[in-house]
Image (tube, rainbow, N blue to C red; front, side, top):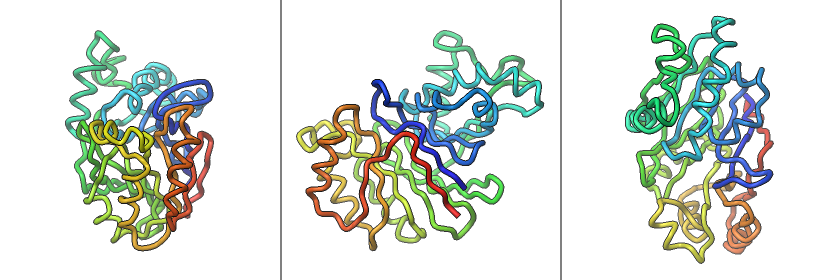
Amino acid sequence: MIIRTLGCSGSIAAGSRTTSFLVDDDLLIDAGTGVGELALDELVRVDHILVSHSHLDHVLAIGLLADTVSRRRAAAERGPVVVHALPATLAALRTHIFNGVIWPDFTRLPTADAPALRFEPFAVGDALGFGARRIEVLEARHTVPAVGFAVQPHDGAPAWVFSGDTGPNPALWQRLRDLPLAHLVIEAAFGDEERELAVISGHLCPSMLGAELAHLAAPVDVHITHVKPGEVEAVMSQIAALGLPHRVRALACGDRLDLR
C-alpha cells in the first residue's frame, strides 16, 4: 500500500497545498488543494474520499473533482465517488457547499439516479474495509466535529495514523496504545508564541505537541503537518528543542510511504 502526500500545509502559497493524501490510486484522505497535484487520469481513478472534518482546507477539491471526472467515470461505468464522513460533516457539505449557490449538488447530478457523488456516513470507532485495507475512524478534538484515521494495508499490520486537525486528545493516545503504530502524521499549526490561538482554534503548537507525544510508549516516526507556509523552519526548530525520543520530520508534498 502506497500513501502519497499531495498536500500538507495549513494554507496556500506557491509550492504549498492544503491537506490531502492518496492511498494507492483509488482513495483520498481529505481533499484540500493538494488534489490538484493529480493528473486527470489519476483523478478518474479515485473511488473514495474520507473526510476528517468540514473545514475548507480539507474539502475544497471535492466539488471540483466531481465536476472534472463525472463524464469520464460515467463513460467507464465506474459509479459515483463515495464521500465518507461523520453525519455532521456530510450535513455541512450539503448545506454550505453542494447547495446550488456555492456549487451544484453533485449528489443529484448529472442525474439523481446516476450522481457523481454519494455520501456515506461513518462514526468514531468504525473500521472501514477497502479490499484488504483497513481504515479505523479515530476521535479528534477540533472546533467542528472531526476525526482522524488509522490506515493499515491489512488487519494487524503496522498503521499509518493521521491525527486530523486536533487539540489535546486523550482518546487518541488511549487507542494508539492498542494499535501497532509505525507512522504518525500530526499537526503543529502554530508556533509556541501563538499557543493561546492554538488552544482557541483546536490546534497544537510545539509545546502542546510534546505533551501529547509523551503518551506514546515507544519511539515512532512522527511527520509534522498543517504548518503554514513560511513558518515551517521556526516551528520545526521549536519541536527540535523539545528533545523528543521520536524520529520527527516535517511532512512534505510528494512524500511517498510504502506500507506492507
